[in-house]
Image (cartoon, rainbow, N blue to C red; front, side, top):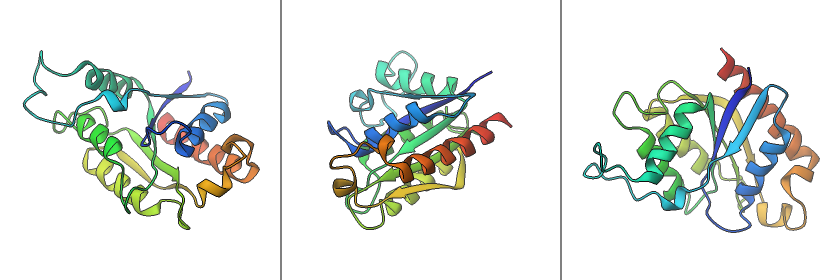
Length: 183
């Protein structure tokens, strides 16, 4: 049986380095694991309890919940916007946290990785994403980390999959989350 890992990317930008990092994860998934990128986060409205009722849940939010519920683990790819988590990723976590105590993230292994332009690679945003996912019920893998600094320069002409150091670190992350999902 293969471990199914869903990737949620917190940047909607065409050419996003975090999207490229997620693409690298798809290509570098270890044997026995499959990584798929969930598109459509831009189509999910901001979380609102008034529309989170049976018969009114937006299709994009339902698709998000179903994809994460069907996965064995989740990897959040987070850039850093103004020192914190991007709204699109926080919104996805909010939708996944409901219903309270039984959302799609409940008990699911979650790792947070990413890249950012700054010298620390987005660690503040990643810490915030870990915090939000944990409060949402996820089993956050606190020791599974990858923060790649200087993304604009580092990936200007090189895709993350072709950066040997980043690729090796990403393989290690995927191995760790695969082990966590298999137990």
